[in-house]
Length: 367
Image (cartoon, rainbow, N blue to C red):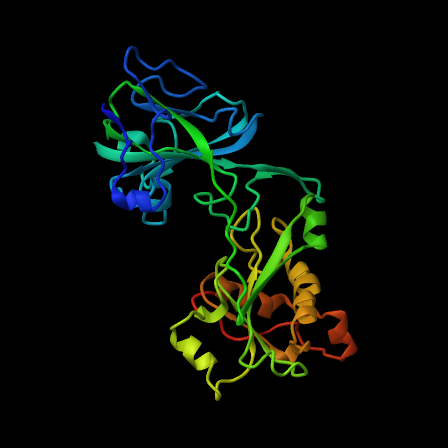
C-alpha cells in the first residue's frame, strides 16, 4: 500500500479549506497489525486517535472514516445518501493518544466491511463526532451528539475533530496499519446576518431543558413583508413553512429569485414567513410533536417559541391567522400537527380561539 501526504492539495480542495496531511498519517509496514479491542488481526486497518492539544481529557462519541475517489472536496463532505463509502464505530472514555480501530469488522455504508471496498486510490479523512451525556427527566441517561446549530450534521458540527487528508492505494488484503490523528476542531456555525427582510431568533427552551437535563434551544428564521417597518400598527398572518433544518430564509426567499421580486411588489399578499429550527439529539428536527424519545417538542414550540415570535414580531396571534405547510420532513410535521395539536397560548385563550394553534395545509412530500 502506498500512502501519499497531500502537501499540495489540488486547487479545488484548497477552495474547500483542505488542510495538508503532514503528520496525521503514519504507515506501519514492519510487522502485521497486533490484535486489539477484539478487532481482526489481518487485513488493512486504521488506528485513529486525537491528541491532548485538541482535547485534554477523555471523550465519548463515534469515529468515522471516509474514502473518496474524487478530490472535489474534503472526503467528509462527500458523505451523503448516495455519496462516498464511510465506516464508523462508537467509543467510550477514549483518552488522548489512544486509538479507535477501524478494520474488516467495522460496519460501513454502502459497503458492510472494508473487505468489500474496491481496490484503488482514495482520499481518506477521519471525523470524531463528540457525544454529550444527557440525564433526562424520565430517568434515562443517554450519550448522544448535542446539536451545535448545524442540524445534526456530524460532517460539519462545531467542536467535532477532523484529520488531515491523505491519499492511499487501498488493498483490503494488505496486512498494514494506517494511523491518523484528528488534529483540527471544526469552528462555530456562521449564522447569516439579519437583513431588512430576514430576521433570526434563538431561545433556550425551559420545557426541553428540563426534559433533556441540559440547555436546549429552539429558533426561527422570519421573513417580513414589504413595508413592515413603514406600518408599525399593522399585524400580519403567518405562514410556517417546514422542512429539514436550515438557517436559510423561509420559502426559498433570496435575492434575484422569483419570490424575491414578487415579495417586493406592491400587489403581493402581505404575510410573515417563518421557518422553525428544532434540532434534537436524534435528528435535525423533532417533527414538531411530543414523543417519548424526543421529548415535549410540540409543547415547547407552541408554548414557548410561537408566543416569543408573536411578542417580537407583529403577527396576528390567533389560530385562523397561522398556516403550517411543508415538504419532506415538513410534510410529516404538518401531518403531525394536524392530527395532534389542539393547543393554544394564553393569548389565544383570552381571544376565545378554540381552534388549533396552527392551521395546517396539505404537506408536500410527507405525511
